[in-house]
Length: 380
Image (cartoon, rainbow, N blue to C red):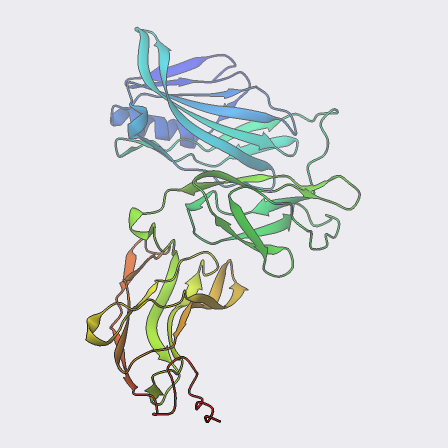
């Protein structure tokens, strides 16, 4: 197709910005979309892009509702950084006149001059797929734009809120200068902890867009630019636990042997596995005393043994509750079910706890409750 031309077929209208080379795969995708009766157009601006500047790939879908459109986020590459993705309603000019529809705007940044290939863009309308691309274009050099940062963040384009994800500062080329482990600036809504070398573990603490921070180099220039990660809503079932990972859990009595009134009785709830252990909420421990009455127990305190492993955290987190029974009888520890999201399968896991019952014997005659089992001093 020549510059500035439009090509159309039944059910499809493909617009091109001047100088854009659209591959045969895109044409085949357009014919498939036409067969399904889904019209669309594609444009790229500015054209041609220059190194270091952002450009937008716009997909217009006349007659489509923005709420029915699903668009996947493409991954960044060494020569192409993905910046953002938006889907919005729009009024579209068509040969028949203005028509309501949906607009998908992909924003990228070109990092190197020469031919650039944008991978296929995954789009669907009402469940009907419209695979768009790959696209190929020429990127012009720019004498004004600074050279790209020598490192870039490798991380998922999107994760569920509270989900751990690996984030790695990777060199863009084999001759990138060595980079020592940097002290990363804080980024709102994101927990980011080192995991060895230039690897980190991220956890989005809020929904929406969070950003892996720009990393400065010792000479004051940027070693890496910021990278957006979309934080998707978590299932409402984990609103209390905030637990995303693969876990087991148990409610136990810590310690063994008989317990007398006035001595310390300890219960513990433990969550073990791999996932977002530093930010999840283990279940609270409740205590019922003799006669099934509630006991005003002191607040539980956190216990943890956590280490970073392969883009997540492992081992254990939990709560420990210590109380001193004032009277003999059976004391029962209970905890509400623990709900977590398995990010690998998307399934919810639920762990229910059996009550833990501990009989408490009477204190010796010469010991008062609350003295820790020590005998009373003899009267003078």
